Image (tube, rainbow, N blue to C red):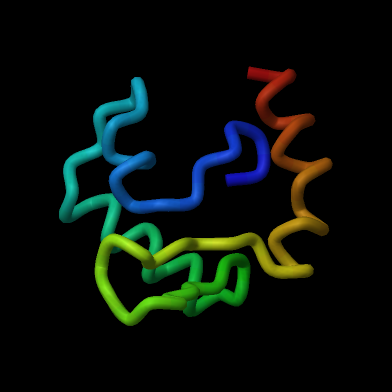
Length: 71
């Protein structure tokens, strides 16, 4: 989303991590409930649904980068 410019479910599911669709769905819902991302559906179809980082999600980006560099 922030680092790889992905915003759609299909883009996430086709990434190199190969996350199962049920796990990806649960993780996206968890991030929505936590206020880190929001779900936009401009055309009212599943294909048009996009996930975007909220202000809260953007604020944790430096922490995520440091964790990535540390690992």
